[in-house]
Amino acid sequence: MGVPPFIPASVPLIMGTGELGADARKDRRGNVWVIEPPIDTERDTPAVDGSAFRKLHKVKDTELLIVTVSRLALDLKLDALVRAIDATGTLAARYPVRLVMVGDGPAREALEMRAEAVNAASGREVIALHGADLDPRAAYAAADVVLGMGSSALRAMAIGRPVIVQGEQAFCDVFEPSTQDQFLWQGFYGLGDPDEGTARLAAQIERLLQDKVLRDKLGQFGRRVACERFSLQRAVDLQLDIYRQVLAGKSGWKFGEAVKSAGLALQLELHNHDPRRKRASKAQQQTILAAAKSGAWPPANLPLTEQKHRKT
Image (cartoon, rainbow, N blue to C red):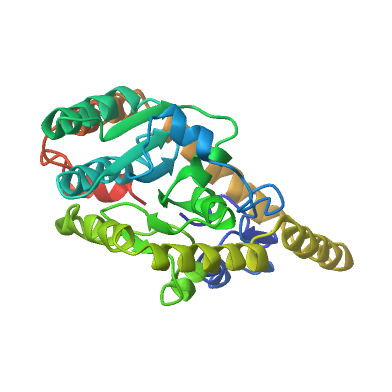
């Protein structure tokens, strides 16, 4: 993630994290500001009732519910979703744990097959796929623990639920005071160490499942951070101030810069529509989906360079 090369260096930019903003300032002449993607902290609150969601999925009062709300997509999402299933599966023999995945997308069939294997091995329903939900607030509210990234993690925090932030390459970390600065800098996402497999995620889930007092404290902490840092009103105030600064300044664009940007944009468009690239991409997607259905993850026959390219 970063600034596309065809964006002129003189164009003012708003970036979504402090880290991206700092990187953009290194080689740009135009101003760069940061506005973290906001959420509606007035609708997403601890007052949201999740009891109907738990009842829908027949989650008992004695069971601990993990929820993830995500597009079931290959890019950015699939690694975290597969590891969520595997980590929950490793805990199912020792804890009355359930995982409900809310969302839909091209990876749904593969994830359903992996979930069915966990359920069969456990002799009970451990993993369930809820499907798409235009208003998933009840799902967040129903959870004892939420796994997520980006705005999904933030919405769970606003509703007062403890969150384990996931990314790719096995990245995961509990959002808590000791990790707050990390996430406020890099965003609610990250790249980890694939060699750790699901062990790190399983350990983090287990830590939260064992301690209700900690879950409650982290839920309150997350709510406070969400309201102070990620509210819509704060984002509006920041954006209006940026508009005023831009209107008061002078345009720094140059004709040669515009021509260069147009050429770079054309090159990217040609690359995206290259039939050979499309065929290779389709074959790679099939390899990834096949691995997501069952067995070892990530797929061993996917070259490391391809894995890195897919995850950046």
